[in-house]
Length: 329
Image 1 (spheres, rainbow, N blue to C red):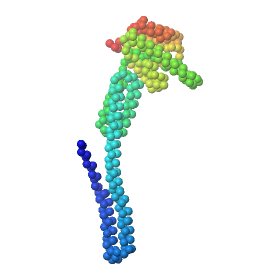
Image 2: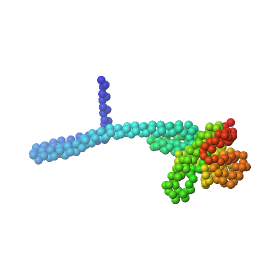
Image 3: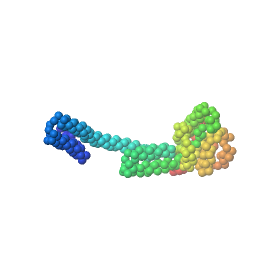
Image 4: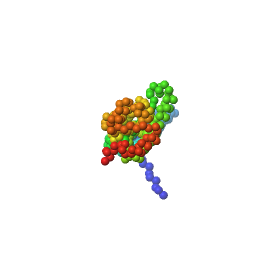
């Protein structure tokens, strides 16, 4: 049978001394008044009335003091309990934030994220780090340790996400102009979503054929790396040119004649001397300059297609001769 631990006695504080002295002084004062009245006036009815009134008044004064002393003892214990609970909650919050940060750092460091995924993870880590600082303070060793780890891992992840890719696949995100969306509203948005999905499928078939018939293993394609058009923004689109510079080959698929940033990208790739493979339903859909370049430049190959099966057949037929993968050597 376990022996119960004795409850710790409440410490007697100076403020308690003052209150006890006040009570004792009041009691002595009542006794002195009673003695004086008995000595000089005798124990008359009025005298005893005064004594009783004095004792009652003293009682009214003493009782709140006694209650206050006891209440202060309870308050001290409650304050200690609250402080302990606060400490435990802060400790749990610290552990939660640390575990979340460590998990995101591990994910950031696995080297498989795109540029956008790295950006999102960095933002999440910054928010978690600020939350941790609010709990432990910026001078806490754990805060500095994780802050340094985030910076180191982020720099490495950014470099890896921008590393050389075998293929850059370019295909229109949408066949709609802003004026069409503004005019037709929801119907235009539905057409845009359908076009995005159709082009995603076409890009995926193309990439599968490239992987199956060449030694290419890495690629960048905005339409394959983003679920829908809403995930893209101007900053990400601007980053595409940086990714293009880090690509060994450029593949463009143009389903129809349209104004599209793909034409900017293919022009940029040609200017950089990157081998370009262009799939188009009709050569007339290409700008005149690009048609001429396709006939004069060895690094620009243009093929006509009707559907994704045609693209797959072309890649199957020509295989590794379509791409330049010298950087893998």
